[in-house]
Image 1 (tube, rainbow, N blue to C red):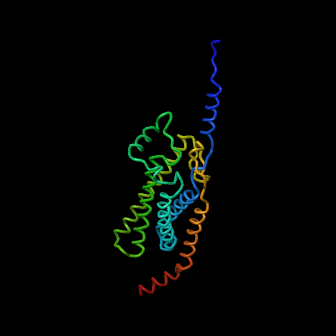
Image 2 (tube, rainbow, N blue to C red):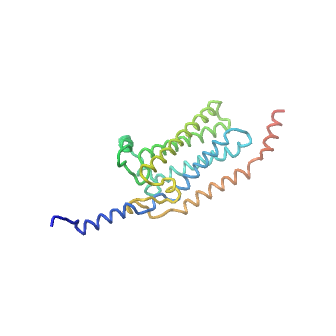
Image 3 (tube, rainbow, N blue to C red):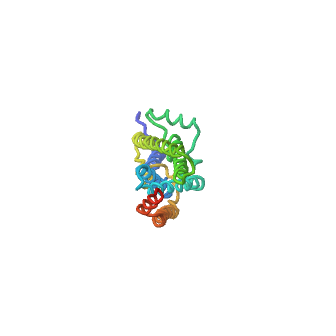
Length: 239
């Protein structure tokens, strides 16, 4: 007979590889996901409330929260789960270049966690968020001249540009790799080999993070003067 058939063991192995590749596993732990969405909320809220004295308390509260979130993510980047650690996804320029060059190809380079280009975007956003919080604190407490406020505004605009590029890259990556990246940052799961998954979601740490943020917000609003009181103080000072 001229017809040939694959060895049963090869077929079994191929089926196993396909099943492994298509399985859904836990990639993003709960602290990373909570941090991600809180950071997005705080930056969007702080940017939207940048103008207007009546929004000053909310703007400042979100700015301080931004600083706390960055501090948490830096710590978690060293002690967190596999894909949360900087050592697992921050690569050098060659890896970034190789990844970007693969995108137009039929099979773009795929990464279970953050890709090399996205990793540097994340580091950039963390750095800019820290700079925004620092210059905002200096401006709010009158520790510098107008240059600090101007720098604060310029960094915020730079952050907005980077966020927009990040969103565009997420959409493009979702299309290229045929996976819903925003959904994975909600559920924590992605299609990947089971060996790439993490064992625990660390919900307890995520709960502590969320409760800490909510407690800080409550403390800020409880102990801060109302808008009318601030207006009265300002009026008295001017007279």
